[in-house]
Length: 138
Image (cartoon, rainbow, N blue to C red):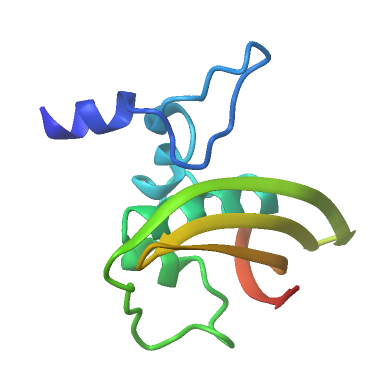
């Protein structure tokens, strides 16, 4: 029952419909994270959102699978005590046929301190899949 409870929970990425209702995980990032073999994210923004959600859920497998091999870390360590607070996508634009950039602000709390991670991320599409390459932090 745990899986179905999770898939109907609000998606951590915060994507909402026209009435400002946050989509359920299973109808949002979950379909890419839980089925990344068959159902990769359709664009760089969807990939970026699903990677944020994977960070919230500490899903290292998905994060590494969607990281371009030129930049992929050998292992991911999640900071203990990080509480993710929300994601705001500020800009999303294609920069070429198989390239795109997404600017976002992710907020989290660590040891009682509020932190803003503001990044313009670069993505590339290879073999029909979008991958995170790297980003510039502000």
